[in-house]
Image: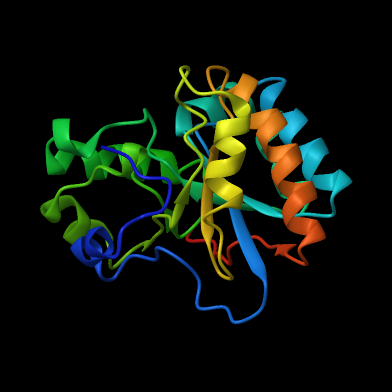
Length: 208
């Protein structure tokens, strides 16, 4: 079951992960999962440029190998990047050994200490094996742009109604989410910008 705003009880399941940033300033941390994707990621980058916004892109390793020029464009435009495994594995359906190996394979092309588990699914064993090497990033607000049954307006409202200073927000720069991600992102940037929010990238460090 998914929530637009992550319940406090759920956050306690991974206490050492970051669900939000400790900001008193009106900053929002937009994150984008599952890219880089032709056309979609570039469109997202152009929208962010329009609003002078920075974000964090949690990249699938295979997509980086397939589209290195888009990955490089993310970096050149001053955004953060993070590891999202090499093959977008679900931790609940993968052994700890395979999950860590897949994450390390992604690290060969995504040079970042940030990690987000695909689907938010990670076992306690996987978490314990990765937490000393990566800053595990979850989220406090989920746009639900991956759901084809929702309108982009619904996704936009999921974000706008639940954002707080320091919120980490999830969008997806994937083909299946594009019809909702792109218009919802534009409207969120406009509305939240009018409310005085800034849009910042999560800090990260190279590990290789």
